Image (cartoon, rainbow, N blue to C red; front, side, top):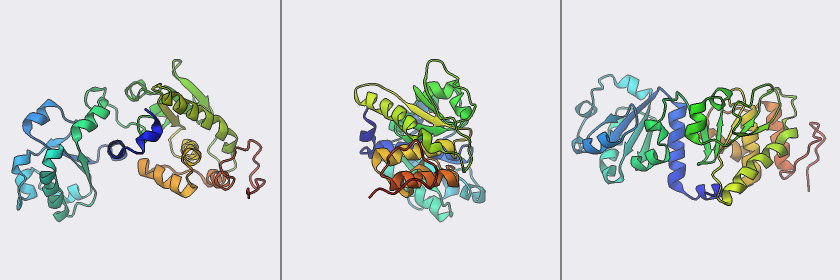
Length: 291
């Protein structure tokens, strides 16, 4: 699949957003499944709680449909309501009940069966505490070194290419293609020296997909916060013509914890001001704005 096509598919983007919600709030998600018991038994996401659709009628209360008595704890949780499209009215009833109980973060996972087809490893794969975040559906992920060294994650996400943005971290898997970005997370580090190398590596994998390949790229540093985030922001800016502000806004929606250090942000600002031109001899304030 051409990664550019993914941004025209609202369903894929919706599923990606929910997948990333599960990673961000791992262990703090209350997940309600609004389907029939037969559909639920056939396939469902782990830790989801079945609420049979037939009991969701107007005027029903939270205590009528759930064993939850302490709504204070529920208000602090991220809530996901998953449902088949035929049960949308019942899902809306539950959403209104939760809103009446002052629950603030509620996400609607429509067409849950299709979501599970896109992420089958969440159901039958080895249990993974937290996956890297999906940035471009079925193509680009951002995460930590620990995740990049986890064979279950590599297998489940079908990773083929890795950008390793650590100083001394190992390229662990011999069957994968690697791009090493040897930098430390310091404000005076010139990470822009590696912009073209990293961009060409990711773009080449994307181009091969347009020709029929199934490449999947993961970018990581130690924690997936600063160095690797900078590389991903750079790629988004140049590939989609985004400003730094818009690229960061999009990335934070997928992975809230990203925070490139001020020095890296300055280099990204200069990269945008110079119309995404690569400059391997960058020395901080020596880049001139292009007319």
